[in-house]
Length: 223
Image (tube, rainbow, N blue to C red; front, side):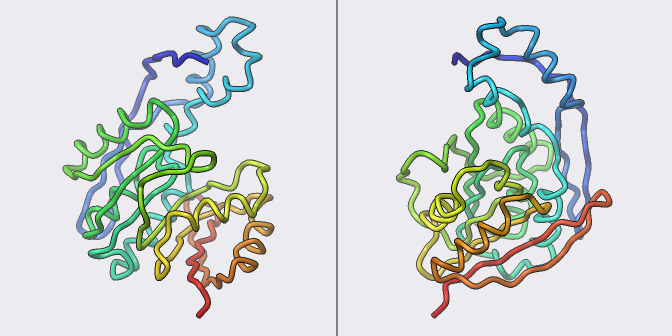
C-alpha cells in the first residue's frame, strides 16, 4: 500500500530524569489520528491488510517506553560507552535517554513517519543519534551487532515467540545483552520460554508508570 502523508495534531510532553529534561512531540490523540487515516483511505484500501501498518501507534508515549527509560536512567553503567540498538523506537524516549547517558545509539522503526517525529524529538531535547528505517521482524540486515539490543512493548503480535527471540538475538554481540520492557502482553511467557531455549537467563524488575506495572527483563547468554 502506498504511503499517505497525514499531518497529525500534536502535543508536547516533557519528562525529567535526573538532571535532564526530555521534550517529546507526540500525536495528540490516537483515535483522532486513526479517524484521519480512515478519511483519506478508500473502502478498498481500508480492507488491505497493510492498512494496519499505517496506524500511527508509534506516536504515543507508551508506559513501557517510559518504564524502559526510567530503568536506563537508574542503570547508566549498563549502557555508557556501549553500542545500543533500539528496535521499534517510536517517539524514541529510550534512545534519547541512552544517548544522554553516553551510549552510541542507533534507533530504528518500520513506520515511514517515525523518522520525522524522532528527529524532532532529538532537536527538542538537544540530542543527536542515528536513525534507520528497519523492519527487524522480517528482513535480514547489515546493521551489525550491538552491546545492547533494547525494545519496549514489542510482543503485541501473535508471531511465533521463537522468531521474535531470534530476531532480537540476531543483532546482539556474543557478549551482549537484550533489554526488554513489557506491560504484561499475552505473548510474554512464550517469549521468555523461547529465550531460555536459546540459552539465555534473565533478571527482572517492575516499574510502575501511569498506574500500570511494566516488567523489565535483562537477558544475557548463559556461560
